[in-house]
Amino acid sequence: MSNTAGRPSPTSLADANWFKSSASSANGGCLEVAFLGQGYVAVRDNEDIANPPFVVTEHVWNCWINGAKAGEFDIPA
Image 1 (cartoon, rainbow, N blue to C red):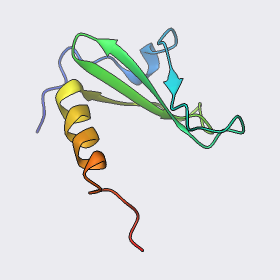
Image 2 (image 1 turned 120 degrees about the vertical axis):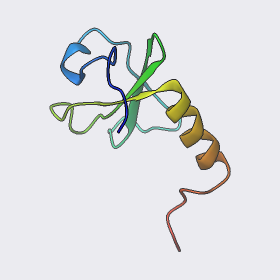
Image 3 (image 1 turned 135 degrees about the horizontal axis):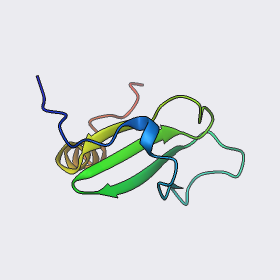
């Protein structure tokens, strides 16, 4: 089980600085990311803002980014 002490709650992110990839279209359909500081990153679906964001540590974020760059999360053909 992971320690969530100090982790920002999804409901406390109203003032987070959200951004999305430049590859995103203006019509939505993208994930947005907010670097929260203190070692945390939040991710949300910009088509469903009412759904709480997913908050992870920077370590988890970096592991996922490295896996994505390596093609580990590509959708199977």
